[in-house]
Amino acid sequence: MKNQYGYTLVEIFISLAVGLALFAGVLSVFVGMKTTTHETATYGELQENGRFALSVLSDDLLRQNFWGDYTGTLDRSMLNNAPNAPGDECVGEGLNNGTFPKALGHFRTLWGKTVTNQSLMVCIDDAKLTSDIIQFKRAISFPLAASSDDNYYIVSNLNEAEIFTGADIPLITNSQVWEYQHHIYYVREEAQGNNTVPVLIQGRLTKKMTFSPIIDGIEMIRFMYGIDTDLPDTSGYGVVDAFLSADDMTSVQWDNGSNNRILAVRIYVLTRSILPDNKYTNNNTYNLGGLPFTFNDNYRRLLFNSTVTLYNSGVDSW
Image 1: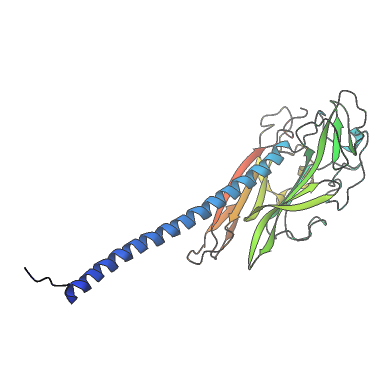
Image 2 (image 1 turned 30 degrees about the vertical axis):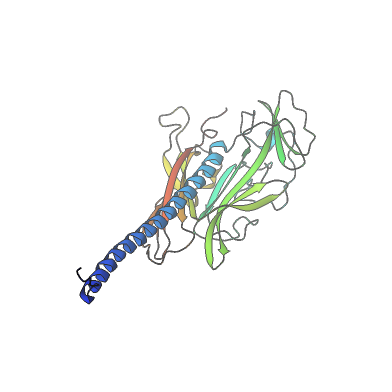
């Protein structure tokens, strides 16, 4: 019977070297897959947040200036009655830019501004500088069977309307009831642990203006307003002639006067990862409607944009 010998020292070292090489390869693949998975998850979250923000803003813009069955422009002269201003009213620039129409100037149902002052609208004191703020006034699209004490409402038919609050609906022939809404959107920064996160905020009218965060990781919103400057019944009427930033808009254009109608709005949404990635450096430049922003940090970002046609502003009646 032959003698059996164990492994030599050389064979053991060779086996260890081969095993170490194989382990290093497997570990490298694991680390690479983990990094790729983290990056994919981060970009997936950025895409989801950006698309959701575009959807929310687009939905409001599409229905801006909608007043139920009423077919004209909402102003104080056509209303049978309008309530007093709600608590903590948000008032934008212009003579008639509060929650409800006043008997003075054009009632602005759409208005925006680039934030240079955190207290831009009095009711807000935490708006992120360099981002935009925008507000809409409209009726919520679905008619109601009854009203309550929780919100403001508008009751309307083809020729007249009334804004009211409470369960007692004003009597207007052949009318329906709709919830009256005043929405405001802006970005603010919130502390979450040791990190500061930009958040898209929605202001919503109930008995007063209330604000709540709706989407984390929205670093900046910006809007370009498509203006038609042509006279009615002339070539080019009903077509956008130029897109202007909020700061380039004039009072005449906000008031849709002197052949300066706002027919469309271009939306830009810049999303940012919630947490930094120290293995990644972002020194990219993002162009938001002709305004470039360059960063040098460890956050991943994606830029989204969409253009919304304002159908209620594009026609004289509907």
